[in-house]
Length: 197
Image 1 (cartoon, rainbow, N blue to C red):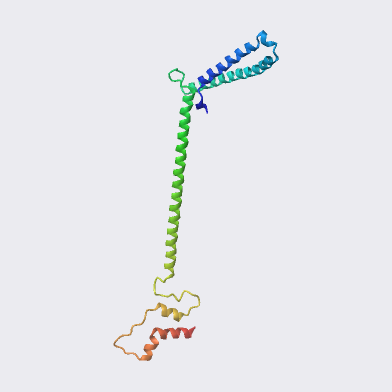
Image 2: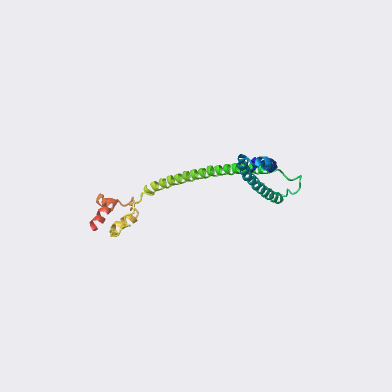
């Protein structure tokens, strides 16, 4: 709002109103108009308006003093550096508008970056979750063909011996009977172990 008005123009306009009010008061206070009741009533109204103009003069002088202090703070004491109020506040108004637009742009960029980071985090978590699921499914398949039988408590020693001991190899030079071969086979050893349970 301060950029809309020029303080010097306001001062000139206020001086013009004050001068006109003073002239009208002098006319109403002339001897020929004092006897007229209508003029006396208008004189009272005009006196109230003149009091308001005087109050505005005081407020305008106060504004001029504050603006002079602002000029000192911005090192505008010299006449060449001094700027009218409309120009000075217009510069500040444009500056603040530009700052507001830049701030809005930065906030939008930050929101976009935040959204992008969230999407990447979700994608990474979904990929890691799928990899973990694949690892778990793979772990269900046996890594070797050996089956541990002796891990449970109460297993027969003979059964443990069958599992741990390597298969017997029969020499070629010593033929064995089918019965003996059957007894030495894994199935025969398994039968003996089961019978011992």
